[in-house]
Length: 444
Image (cartoon, rainbow, N blue to C red; front, side):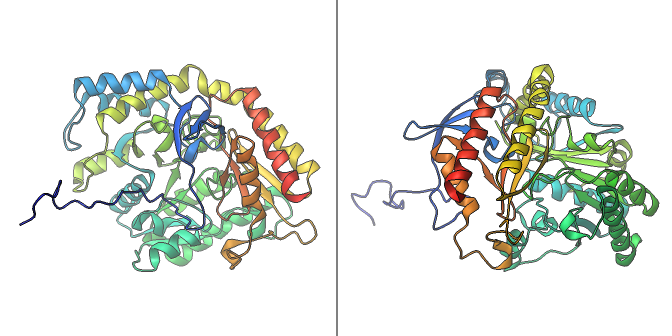
């Protein structure tokens, strides 16, 4: 029997959270406050959050309309089972159907982007009665076992696959110049789309349920497809009866200039997955928006899967308020400022020879670095260079020292820029000034 021991059975050591994407050689910043496009660390230092934390706080930090909506919902009823109906959940589904392209109107809620992509894959396999989902090499669709198998980023897949593996995911090449020997963007679009058709044929079209793609590359580097690529991809999917799923976890909710990134390609997918920006990350929420016939098929056949916190009422209230904020002014504000961001980044590429290229759309951009003498990355972690000191990481650190936070791409040969949609022109200019000074400090 234990005597004179307070809280018997509890450890006496202090607890400590393990950060995600943990680097034992690094030290994670501790952020304790935020307002608009600015966050503050535990020492009171201010930083422009030009990566929206994880490409998700689209409405910025401390938006009162969103927090007030969440508070009101918590006071009414904080939780309702995901197996039951709920008024705010139904209202958000209706909101999403109104802003989704074309006939996409059926909403299946989940908790995270990883789970949304897993759900979309499962739904596609169910309604198509086919086992395979095709995704790109150099893509990111999540870090859970199922979504990780869909991901084309080798660091994620290797980490998950070290001890377990899942089946039903095959890969194809992304529409990047480095993957094809093309003479023009149009030629690249044709070659890359023909390659996808070749993969479908060789996998066996009857075995392929869907293609899952980011409309604009997310953590893989903010790259848009060459003109005509998605139109041809849509034709191929229709020809072989393959569903086209747009992963809008990062590109949705105004990030790329429209409600959803796929709308910048004038193509209607069969499903959209969403997360992050739907609530401006004020509460975890994600899901799938599917074509009407897909929803009807799932309802008729039943769906014996679910998640406790999917479509959480407080998160749905946050989603409704965030959509109102995006619609009232934030998407228009960001669309107006997007050319300023593009112009400043193009100036960086023109004036600094270590910047190989800049690419992106709207408020999602990548600055790619390479050795000007060889044209190769200074350090390429996926090619076994992860033990070498990476100057691209040094640029991010130098920018943070100047009060501006940027993201790292996959692979880490690039810097990602994804500001909140509420970022002002002055903040944007100040952030790019900090980036330019960091490049000069690191390389010159």
